[in-house]
Amino acid sequence: MTSQVPDILVVEPGSIDLPQMELHGVVIASIDDPKAWTCYKFANKGSEGKMTMCTALWKGYISTYRLKIDGTLVLERLEYPFSRGVDPDEVNEPLQGDFWLDLREWFMGSGVMVPFVDGKIVAEKTHWKYKSGLPARRHGR
Image (tube, rainbow, N blue to C red; front, side, top):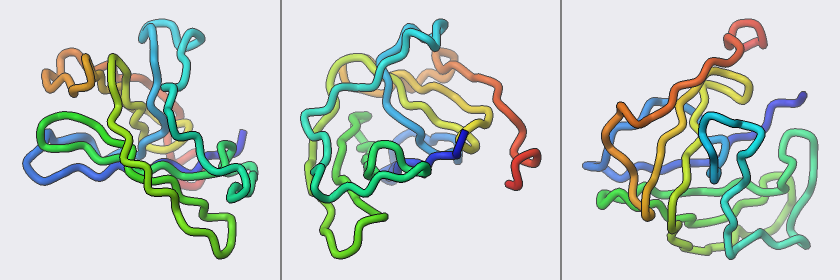
């Protein structure tokens, strides 16, 4: 399986400290059953005419999110790094409801699932779910 280009997560100064990991998605999940995970349903899906699909970027764009000081998360922009001469889409879509950030050391690596309830991060780290993955050194990282 080809590693995927991670999304971008900007954490505003003064908000919660997150592990220095890559963001590999926002999911709706029964956290103990990974087969039941689904992607968060965004109103903004990306401009098909701007997308260039490749094995390293299945969805055709990179999402940029901002974790705000008040604990909310906003999808700010969609970028198309494999398409020449196209501007990013500025979307500024606040995420709502219950969801999880899927943070990982690398695409197949260990990580942590960080919960949001009613659109706000759960700061109490005892509610975060840590998961094992493949060690980075086995894959040239």
